[in-house]
Length: 219
Image (cartoon, rainbow, N blue to C red; front, side, top):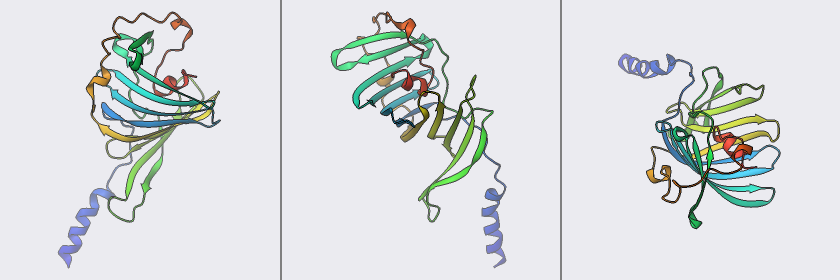
């Protein structure tokens, strides 16, 4: 009986001594899907994404519902080349815009405040729930707030919400995440893109800086 008690205590010790969560960075290579919606119900997106933090590349294919109109957007962001390509694969067409901002990796900012831990699903049985950490903070150079939820193990993005002046809260939900790039060709410019000329109205368009600004600049 004593040996059984000692065994149980040894198994519980790591849990009891676990430290509180700290800000983390997501895996440098991710493939998955996400949805984006605004509090004022002006727009809704469904998108597939490919994320390469090592090569500073990001590809996103969106299906957009905006003011009762549906359209598609396919964007390849190459931060090392300071260029964003808007791709029309069916018509073999491609336009190029300047990307004037630095690459922003998927991560919890160092100054974020922990809101707490929670289990998505159920804790009633093995495999029925997912342990996540939720954080909040203030966006850089702004008074607008943000909230971010990632998995405790792996720092996989689950949910992000940004406060905006024009749309209220904008919510991003991540799902079907896979560590790694399932199709590396998605991060390579198509053959018809390298010679694309810089968009003439590039100066009138706000630069795409991260997930949120890429979505909002479409509207």
